[in-house]
Each structure stands twice: as structure tokens, then as C-alpha cells.
Image (spheres, rainbow, N blue to C red):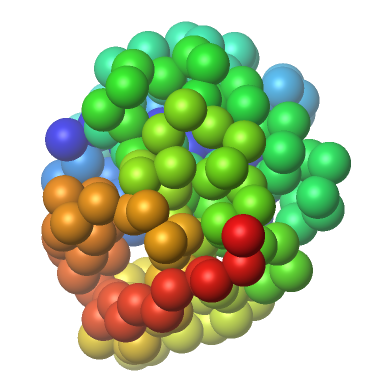
Length: 183
């Protein structure tokens, strides 16, 4: 399975690390070359040269999501940023790609309604500090069974829930779901 992570800031770098360690192929994208450079150095130190090939670095969203099964945006939790990234991901990713967005402020039902795939959209209700803080146990960067909340739009498919559940469990988290009933 291939995961595209959009944004190589602290959350994007950390996700790339744990997702690669879980055996996924990762494409990490950022428009800022310095963020990609920092991410590459961080991942080289954490993964070592042998495992680093599991992570590919991309400078465009289109390149990152071309073959992605999952696309996770790590852009700021602001409405305009989320809408823009969801529209780009929806347009550029294959129809099978599931879109995941970390957000505490935005309605996943509203964001999903702006796509042609509302059945393949899920929100992770956490911020960077919460997610990475849950994962830092015994010096190992994994979820270690920590519970995470995933919010779904009303039209989410059973297949999407299964894919997302398997993904989060594989990287060490215990997902629980709630519906976002906002229209």
C-alpha cells in the first residue's frame, strides 16, 4: 500500500517515519524545498540508509498522489487551506484514494461535500502535539495502542472505514469512529 503525505513539517515528517516503519511505501510532498530537506535528513537519521528507500520525496502534489492508496494532508487547520488541499487531492489522486485530514476545527462532512469522493474522506481529530505525544512511549515512535478519534461524513463507505482502520492499527493506534452529522 502506498501513502502520500502532503506537508513535510513536524507532523508530516513524523507520519512518514511511522508509516515507513510499518512497511508502507511513502511519498512525502512539500512545496517548500527546505521542509523536504529537513525531512530527508530526519528520516535518514531515524530510518538509516537501508530503510530510507521506502520514502520518496516529491515536489508536487500530483507526483505524490499519482499512485496513492491513502493521501494524508498535513496542512494548517484553516478552512481555506483544507478546502484547497481537498480540491487538489480530489482532482489529482486516483478515484480509489482515501483522503485523510487531521483537523480539530473543520467539519469532514463539509470538506467531503466539496469532493467527488465523499465516501472516501475521513478526519483525524487530533493536532500535531497530541498525535506525536501519544506515540512517544518508551522512546519508540509508534502509537502503542493509543486511542485516536476518526470522524466520518454520513456517506463514508464501509470499505473506507476498513482501509483507514487497518492503516491506523498497523502504525500502532486504536481508532474509534464517530459520524460528523453536519450537512
